[in-house]
Image 1 (cartoon, rainbow, N blue to C red):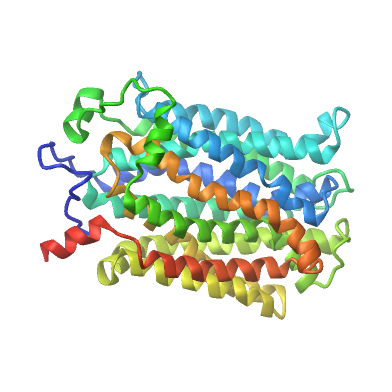
Image 2: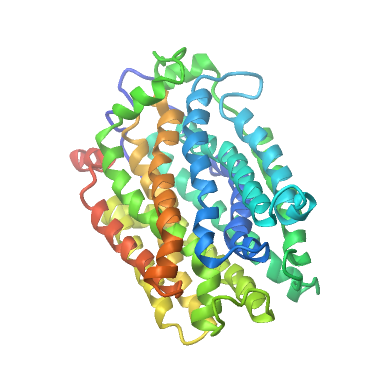
Length: 460
């Protein structure tokens, strides 16, 4: 989708960045395949693992708080320093390589919390490993989005983020399905007594660790970054090159108008996603399979956990395909309308779970969620990148993460108690609320100022 240079990012006195080939863009984002492989394992299995370790359903959202809290702190700091880094590996690559090594180690620890069970209650150890794992994921993830914005001219950014979203979807499909595949194709047991994790989940996490570091190494080897002199030609001189961490607060106060408006869209979107990730397994177990909320060690609960992985692979698979369509759709109806339509589809999908007559119906629900997920991973960043000063791409991508983590933290605080006291231990209503939030996000995006779209209109 050809987009003229925005007046903010691509200044007329700067040298235009060269266009990259499809395979250069693909290699640049390939590491995200492994990152999302690991995230999918976490999203579809962490609640079940914590329940196996003794967590009650109303406590799940509290334990999941570790992930967004860590992201809130880590991503802006990583963004700040990656804007100011240059060594033999480059600017962004040192960070996602370090994140890959640490994340791979954390993935092997999460399903083995029992090794430290004598130190603290098992569920606390599991939650601590979840926090460590997410800190490492964030260290690897944030520089990838900045790398796309660094290397691509504005005219290729929709394609760049769409390819990134496609790879995210592919990685998440494999990660979500892997425990189910190991059990039903290779006969690896999914059964485990309370306080332990099934072998299928353990082996999936080990495979995920290898895949994570392998895919990131591919990007490190195959992708080049502009050295400082060339970077200045394309982006201009960074006047805050030697500024300390205190500049994060100054940049936050001076964030662009578009970023503030997108913050509301992101708030509703990620509040919805957090509720879906935390409560889907227990929704399937109680609302679809008819288990009591206390039953977390039966074979049916294990089936609910496995089916969560299956349907999560569906929404990720749909997102991979739909992501490739986003540039064409955005060219036809505009970037904001594309995102709004996609979010409405996600809202319908989440609310439809309440009416599911059986677990197979949830495949349809997740097809619609996948449409929203693809757009959430791509369109806000396409719109945002046209409004960010080039020398601050990393820090503003990190600050933008506030609007992802804060709604998750809020949902984490109130979500569990709401299920117990407001929804009478029926977690399906948490997913209905998530659907309503998707509709609110769709309405909010209509009012966002998109400088890239304005440039297109002016050119026409």
